[in-house]
Length: 251
Image (cartoon, rainbow, N blue to C red; front, side, top):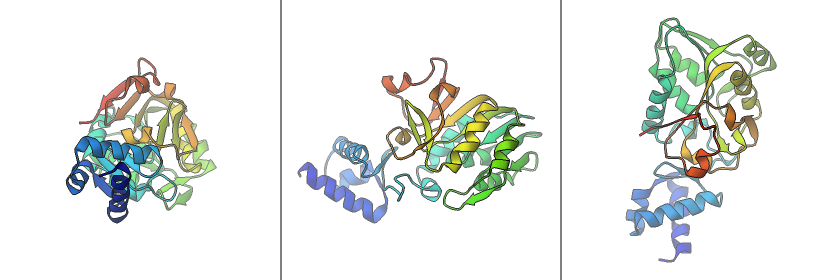
């Protein structure tokens, strides 16, 4: 089968299912997994689909999956990333939780007495309602129904009064220029939280290294103390970060 025909069939399958795995496409097209991986990489690099761990996903209208779509991407893997992030949470601490499907998983894991979580994410706040030991502060403002977060200039001013032990930050895109998000309103609060934090932990799956659809910058990579991701960084990618930035891999 010619490469062009394989790519056409993969895109056709993706239209029907929205998400494909390497194994199922290899079986469907009777080709090797390596061949499928190369085809997946080509579709992702040419902006026709989104590369995810072990598979491929259709792009949303903005070129980046919305919150609901992201919740379907490898939930077990997100749980493993969240478990790594949980190691940076302790009793009586003050933490900022950004809008992120992985950080929703983190919110479900922790239940420390005296801990305070500040967030603008509805899903983080709802996940944290299961804890009777922690204080949860939900920042107010205008609700973004698409990605389920609030934002306002008042909340931005309130963040300046905090000194976080750790700011946990999500991202839509990671590149040598920094980390980026799709919505401008989603960039202000994490940017301020990073300034107010003793430690910055960023959670980002490897597919977010390969998209160029997010425009609004949150921070430079040299501001990141810990990166939690799902695949080994290339030598080039590792050089993007400070030498003392801790890189943790979910398995």
